[in-house]
Image (cartoon, rainbow over all chains, first blue to last red; front, side, top):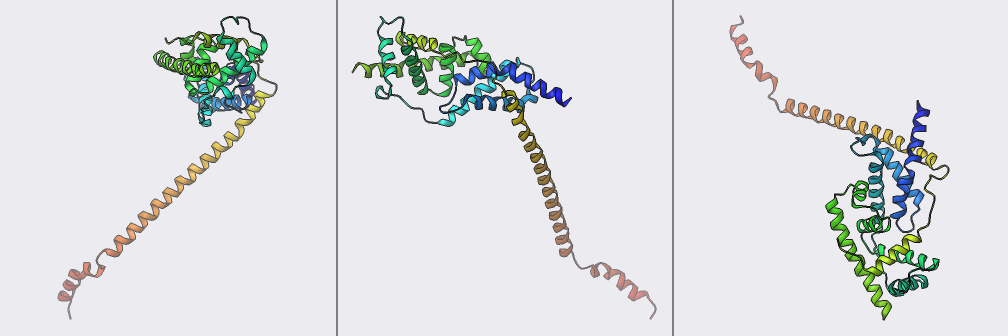
Length: 182
Length: 98
């Protein structure tokens, strides 16, 4: 019986791992190890497993644990740096320059990496919740309903938060662009 | 919904294209590590159970001590027992043959 329990737990971890790691990778605090964070999420899941009522699918329930755990880890960092043009690497500055010129439609891989790093920097200036929303809606291209299932937030909260998050991101991006033109 | 700046949209699109395609399967030994990390949690639960019991016993003992103290205080403050027998003694003294 004990052996069967261990096997079931192992299977559960392996089944849920892709869901958890996707959330963890998208919401990883600076200098944190994704595997450690995923392990913490699973530990929390087993701790709370007796509270699972089956009202929502297990995957959604675990997603919410992962989301909350990651948000708490990001909140613990406290500092939310606001990046300036001078803080950008050469690749990031080049990506910013390229992205603002409409001609650059097919960027080379180095520009893509620069763009990714630049997006990470822009997202760091947002609150953990705003960051999570932008990632899910804009980066992972998930629907409001999918975000609702994964976070447990209501559709209205998601829409309002997303509106504010986009406005903040636009503002932050506008600042960088303005500095880049100087 | 509020729209993103077109250049920012393009930046996000590029960032999406650059997303590293990391494996989404649990690495070897991961589930074992998760299960191993559950054991100390159980031990701590047992410890917490013992701690809770110890606290319960302490409170019960404290309650007993307080009750005992109250009984002692009430007994000391009660009038001396001789007064209770004074009527009986005077009755006996007057009725007993000398």
